[in-house]
Image (cartoon, rainbow, N blue to C red; front, side, top):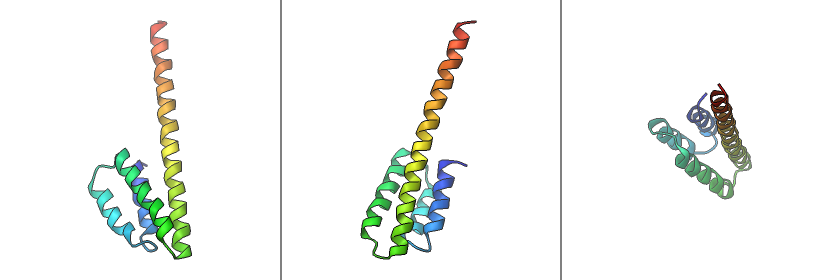
Length: 96
């Protein structure tokens, strides 16, 4: 599953609790999802946590922020692992 697909699932889960989720989902569906878009979404969710007064919505938004943090960390770990694998392959080629 791609990062964009994860984000769309997240926004779908939030749309009954948080009114902005549906609009953001439409924007994500129609656009390229890159790092700046991910950061903007993170900022929006973080700000919404502070502004929402409904406790259930606040809890879901907090979990969503944690999900985005984990998604980003997982992506960074994956990139690091890929780089290490490429270095290992390059080293193997040099030793042929």
